[in-house]
Image (cartoon, rainbow, N blue to C red; front, side):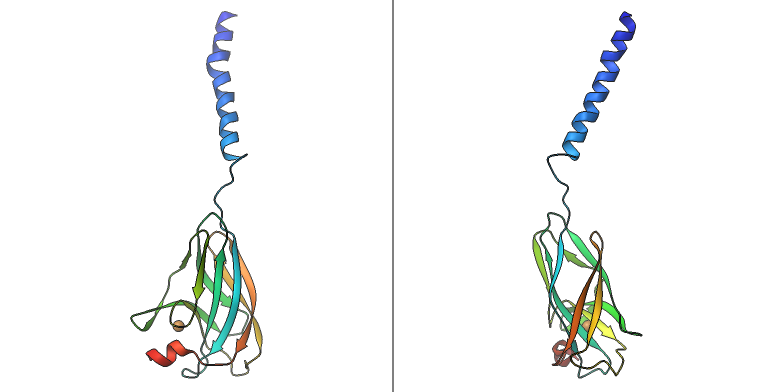
Length: 160
Ligand SMILES: [Cu+2]
């Protein structure tokens, strides 16, 4: 009797107490640091310099408490390829991923970060719309509708 009671108190009670406290700390009260991603001001521009290529510019708003990374992009235009690009020392370079810290807005804009499109079919004209799929490491896939705007791809104009 004394022995069983001893085991109960020394082993089981601390174990239950541990599980309870652990559950309280992680499950209730505090929430985990997750990103909250929203896409704004998306626009696409055809290049006047390189036929069949263009850029997508947009704002990635992260209102969450956690960081995220944009790891890739796709479009629903047959045969068109996309790459994440940055501009360094006046030259376009491929970006492996685009970091989006918590509570931060990252802007893809001419002369800086952008999404590059290659092999855009000739029948894609100004005013046409397509779907852009953005792949985020933690937030998964986000899709936005993008209109092909007029104008020129000025980072290509100035640096090539
Ligand atoms: Cu580019």
